[in-house]
Amino acid sequence: MKTLITLTFFSFLFISCGKEVVPDRTEACDGSSAENCECFKATNRERVNKDLPAFNYCMSCFKMAQEHADDMAKYNYFSHDRAAVSGRPAETFAARAGRFGLGWGAGENIASGSSGSGAVAQWMASPGHKANILNPSFKSFACGYNGGLSVQVFSAGQQ
Image 1 (cartoon, helix red, strand yellow):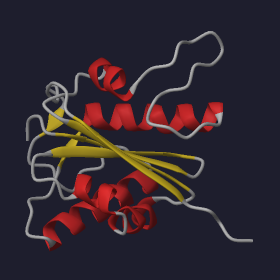
Image 2 (spheres, rainbow, N blue to C red; image 1 turned 90 degrees about the vertical axis):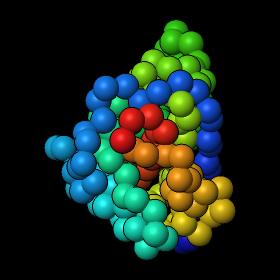
Image 3 (cartoon, rainbow, N blue to C red; image 1 turned 120 degrees about the vertical axis):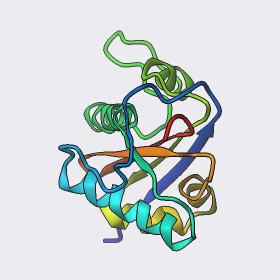
Image 4 (tube, rainbow, N blue to C red; image 1 turned 135 degrees about the vertical axis):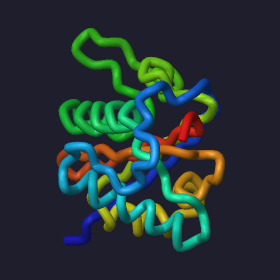
């Protein structure tokens, strides 16, 4: 049986990555899972291979990415917008980014069916996802993962 890999990308201009960017930590994983750490390092390798600076690790990006991966896995949906479930209203990507203090440009890649460097390889094969990863305006990011769902959140905020 073939595994269907579903990818989607979203880039949205918004406000600024809060004070939780870890400066000069381009290989940091700060307690992330093995999948998240592999995703972080593979993404930075892609940037460096294209003569772009490596991303800094952004704790706000991690919290947003991990929350979204957990939510999609728990409530069985796949979208940049959070589903309305159990009496909870839906939440757009822009609203989620604002809730986590991200802005001056925030972006998100989501994937189903892969993790770590496998998800990064698939995103790099997709023009829209690749554009997020190689966007020189984005300075920091982090990954989230749960049950076959991978999420990257990018910020053009502080380095």
